[in-house]
Length: 208
Image (cartoon, rainbow, N blue to C red):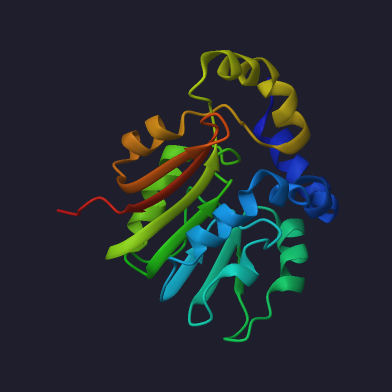
């Protein structure tokens, strides 16, 4: 098993080499294009949770005002070097995605890319993302999780513990089940790479 402390340590120790080791091959798999298409939808005041090293910062529309959070201070130290934007610097905050320190309905767009695999409680994270998103706003997700192909899903399950120890990431989570459990209202979804990559445009559940 992997403790929460071990998982968080993986982020802190891997921050400086994360882009080179994890992000460098994304264009080969088409993930760079999926990021661009998703983030082009962002508008207004934007919150990105589990922002990591700030890989998305250059991809947001110029008129967006960006606040980015992550639980790892070393990750955000790397992100700070990418935080200068033509429309103003990204505001960075160390914060757990499961307990966002913002009032209800603070943002027009709430974004997470490849972060639901790396939080302790993904359902709580999705609920928090919806809480801080304004009604009529958008929740944008690009995630990896279990495959729609049973053989590949079994392989991911078998390697999940070692992968989590190395990268702090549980790559076999059932993203659709998590979204349903959180009450998220999915508007558009695409699945790529044998179903392991999820591209989702959603809106927060209606509030009573």
